[in-house]
Amino acid sequence: MDFFKTLIRPDREKYPDRAEVGRAANLLQIGEFQFLQLAYTEWFGREMPPAMFDRLFDSYMLGDGVPFWARHHARKIIALDADGVLDDADPAYHRYDTNYVMRVPHGVRRFFVATTVVVGFLCGGIVVAHLSVGEGTSILPPYFEKGELVPVKAKRNP
Image (cartoon, rainbow, N blue to C red; front, side, top):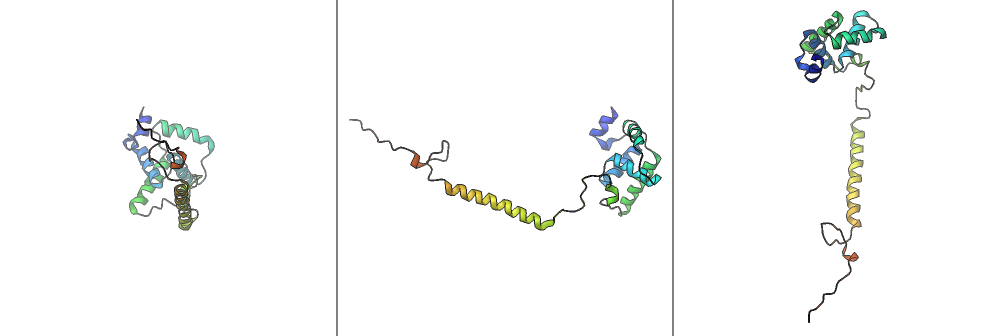
């Protein structure tokens, strides 16, 4: 049940080592398992073998097993942040992110051009809608134009 409580309220992690790893992962803006992969690579100098994924996931996520190399890496990241030298946008921290983008793809100029085109279409649509409507009889439905109505002659009572 602690697993689900932690998912709902991660700030109430009862295991301090896992809280430390979670804090370091949040500082880098990556997931905790990605953080574990980075810590393994830094400590051992090679990528984590795929056979270790399930074992590590079970011991870390479902139990309270935090490997010593993950604690070491977490403390290092927290210390870098405390010193003010942590660069969370460093591509080395995001090499497992498939969709991580470091910059705006086409810059500010393209944004303003796209915004101008959208505003132009909206304003043009409003102008065309205004010009295509004739003289209306009412602002409430049903919307009839004066030309569509047949004049009714008033009857006189003798």
